[in-house]
Amino acid sequence: MNYTNKNITVFGLARSGIAAARKLVSLGAKVTVTEIKTASDIDEAVLKEFHDLGVDLELGGHSPKSIVAADLIVVSPGVHLDIPVLEEAANKGIPIISEIELAYQIIKIPIIAVTGTNGKTTTTTLIGEFLKAGGKKAAVVGNIGIPLIGVDDTSFDYIVAEISSYQLETIVEFRPWISLLLNIQPDHLERHKTMEYYIQQKARIFINQMGDDYLIYNQDDAHVSETVKKAKAQLRGFSKSNPEIITLSPAEIRIPGRHNLENALAAAQAAYLCGVDKKTVAEVLRSFPGVEHRIEFVSKIKGVEFYNDSKATNPDSSRVALDTFCGRKIILILGGKDKGVSLDALAQKVKEGVKAVILMGEASARFERSLREIGFSSIHRTGSMEEAVKKSFSLAEMDEVVLLSPACASFDMFSNYEERGRAFKEAVKELQINN
Image 1 (cartoon, rainbow, N blue to C red):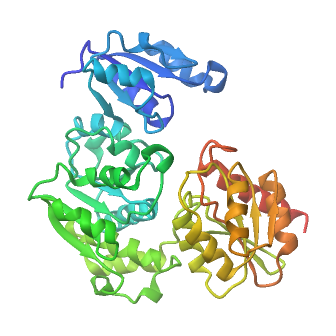
Image 2 (tube, rainbow, N blue to C red; image 1 turned 90 degrees about the horizontal axis):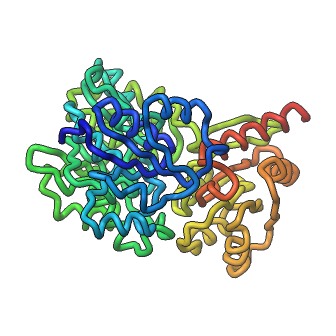
């Protein structure tokens, strides 16, 4: 598509919206950005930049006037498609696409796209590490730092992108050379409403792939194994029961947890398709420390270990984190913005191996009800991260673990899971200074 002099409206002024607007201006489009936040909540440097670029800004809400002359709408992942102005645009036949679709229409080098309920960030990062160690130039993007649309593809051999179900909702032609579908567990039902619809959105990662593309998938996940049957791409399965595709034993993988064996197997398959040898993959797995906010060791204070798992934004992810510390006593910090998914399996896991639960955030009441219903009563409510950390430490004893693994989104108290994780680490740092 030729974007010169096209009227394009970007919904949302977070990272992907900002990057999309910049790219569209550079391509000669007439850009309008509409954002629900007011000017006081937006970085002044961004406002000045867009003013200088000639971008029209509508702040404080999305009104119909933002789409009156639009030839195309680009939506940020956090913008729900059922808001009235977008429904009106759809009824008028105005194309609505995601930032990753816009990026795909511009990018000329192979894209490796990773999705799944859990493990996306670790797997995406690992693929990037494998490629770099193998002498390839790889950009690691998407939900990790730089949006896909922000990449200068002239500088790289491959782009490795973490992709969410929100972004896949509004793709049209997006077609990665390699797609990875790691797992599908209940998540984001407050937006997708049903598990069936959520699965459909995850499956869109391979919907446009053809016979010369590849789909790497988790053979141990029933939802995934059923979903990939309709794929046209070449299938490459992985399974914890068959770890031979990596040449080291699972015990040699530095990042802890059985789930990280799955992430390693998936990432290794992608690396091999790009020409990275097995020796290089093994070397990286022996040294890769993991990603920030995912079962990240923070500190040890008077024999108590603190781990930051802020990226656990759903119950299944928190259950995986608890498995990592199987056999050890855990003080678990839970809670945040409720996603409306079942808490039963997590509650049972808590009952089996958690010493005490510290609750915070708007989901506290539902978590407490779920835990008390199965007979777990060591529950403490707190109003801040600092209070939660202090309470956890007061309950912990030598060789026990304090684990922040919220099982919820962060938006009730924080801008994102990164801010929540940093708040936890700062609270632990203060605790260490005072002890």
